[in-house]
Length: 209
DNA sequence: GCCAACGTTGGC
DNA sequence: GCCAACGTTGGC
Image (tube, rainbow, N blue to C red):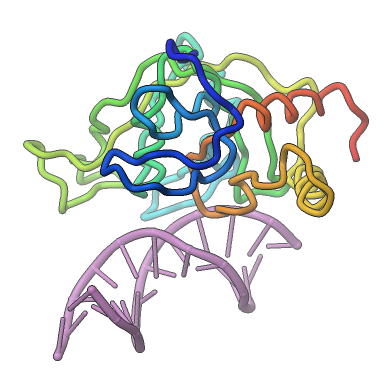
């Protein structure tokens, strides 16, 4: 969790350049730097086999759980915004493990960030699906973090249910009205406000909508 | 398998 | 720096 105290009401913040801009949402805003500080995350991965250049890209929450120490590196992110969010992650923060591109998409469990961003070695590996010929070892483009399995959700939270809440909250107000999963659909690593995170956790104890 | 949304690339 | 073409994501 962040060492600086946070404000949750602030919607207008000051960028480093000193220009006023609107925060993406009512996320936490740091006292000092003036950029939004996110503390919770959602990370997507595919739990079902799919072959890319002859290589299976399947990696579901069960695969993470099966690794030594239930810990693995989140490699292969090749999108700048997703990468930048990973670079903001701090050790000890929590992230939802989201299952995408599968029969039942949704949130499967919770993991912990156990190592902050470092060079993703797969960008230099010609055999890797996510090899990037344009990235040079003296100036690597892509980063990854290490994540550790924390727990399964008490019940799987399907995208369809989250979407119902999102639509409801968009109409009448509520914590999921701006959730990145819906407003930034293709982003594979996304920030959640603590309000979004806590609300989603509260759904575990509710009946499916 | 379809295709909408959207990020990236590259010509100009 | 614009923007059309292209490629990818990911729900359905």
